[in-house]
Each structure stands twice: as structure tokens, then as C-alpha cells.
Amino acid sequence: MKFNKQALLDIFLIFIGTSIYSFGLVVFNIPNNLAEGGVTGITLIIYNMIGFNPAYSTLLLNIPLILIGLKIFGFRSLIYTLVGTFSLSLNILLWQKANIAISVDNDLLIAALLAGLFGGVGSGIVYKVGGTTGGTDIVARIIEKNIGLTMGRSMLILDVIVLILSLSYLSLKEMMYTLIAVFVFSIVVDFVQEGSYSARGILIISDKNDLISSQILEELERGSTFLKSEGAYSNVERDIIYCVASPPEINTIKDICHEIDPKAFISVLTINEVIGEGFSYEKMKAIKRKR
Image (tube, rainbow, N blue to C red; front, side, top):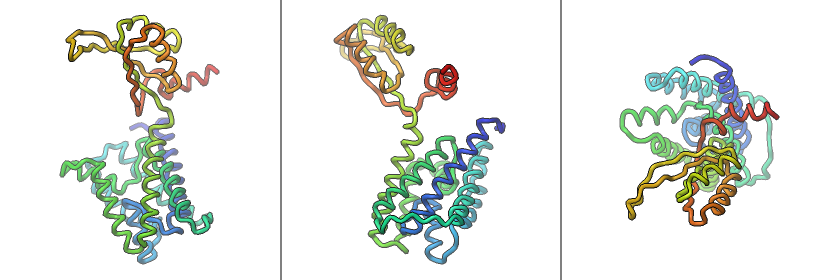
């Protein structure tokens, strides 16, 4: 891994992401007795049991996990994990020193929504650049490698265990609001990771593929690909048009298909990520420069 401009930008974004996450933790989770999953949840249990600062327990719990997981990390992943772990601990300490208090008038629903929002945005930024804050991510990778259980399931099991243990200092009411925060967190993380620039894939089956693909290229400057297919019932070989476009362009493509071939079969797919000309960051920068 070379420390080029992109790597430095990634590290900066990891710091910003952990800052946003820790703000929600310090300002909304801790004052309103809302738990967390993973290692952060364990630090909150320790804090409520013996008063040990989460800024320090975060490091004390994560560093041994990082050392255990050294064999499963590439150099880039190791650096990003170290940056995420140390910046999370530092940002928790900084927000504690800032002593910011935001009143929610004892409304746990508002507190849960805000905790989930800030946690999701912060973590989403960290995950989007390939970073991590250590914790259960490392444990889940170790479990996946040695036992074969997927990371998603491992992390879910670990989070459930931590949340159950959190009942040692939470009431059932506070736990229910914690689950709301966790739900909001998961939605926001997905949106930050995948929703910042969405795209759609479209499959078109028609007898006039050449005309449709040419018209799409002419009107939208979107290229398309012919995929070979065979009808399961008719056993007839034919081409399928595959094209990737932004959501607003889908209606235009539908109109083109309807005008050229009203009988065309169209299927629209949701795409989580597109890398390449017309969608990548480098292309967007080139467009902005032209403007």
C-alpha cells in the first residue's frame, strides 16, 4: 500500500467517520442509557459497572484483538484498522472534553433515532473507504476463517450476546429503544455506503435490439451490451440488451423501448455499486472540470 493522495483521503475520512460516530455515542447513547453492539457495547457495560472511560477501554479491548487478527489482515486493512481504532478512542475523549449536552427532554425515541443516525453516518463513512474500527469485525473474520460461519451471521450473534449482557444495567424499556437505534443504524449505514450514487441495470428483450441500443446511445450516451440467451420454452436463441443508467434515465429508456418495440420485455435491476466510465469518481471529476 502506497500512501498516495487516495490513501491519505481515506485515512482522513476514517477520522471524520469515527468523529461523527463517537459524537453520537457521547452525546446520545451514554447520557440516555442506550446500549451498543460489539466492542463498543462492551465498553459501555464496563463504564456503567465500574465507571471506566470508554475512550480507554476501546483501546484496551481492541489492541489485543488486532494482534490476534494480524494473520488475517493485509497491510492496507491493518493500517486502516489501526487508524480507525485509535481515532475512535481519541474522538470519544475529545467529545467528552468538549462537554456538549443536547437535551431531548427525556424522550428516548428521539435519543434512539439520533444515536442511530450519527452512528450510522459515521460508521458508513468508515466502511465506505474500506476502514473498520476493529472490535467484532476482527472476531467475525477469525470465526469465518476457522469455523466457516459467515461474517454477517457471526457479527449478528456477537451483537445479540452483547445486547443481552447490556441488560445488566439497562431496563427492558431502554433495551427496546436501543433496538430502535440499532435498526436506524443499519439502515443509515447501508444508505451511506450504497445510496450516495445509485444506479439501475436494465435488461431488454426485443426483436429490435439494434435500433433500441442505438437510440439509447444517441439520446443518453449510455453504452449497452448484448447478452446471448435462449428461451426456455421456445429454445430460440436471441440477444438481450443490458444497460446501466442512473435512476432518472430509466424512464427515458422505457419510452425509447415503447416507441421502437411496444412488445419489448423490460426488467429493471437495483445495483449497489458501479465502477467504470460514466459512473466512477474520476469520471464525475472530469465532468465537473468541464463545467
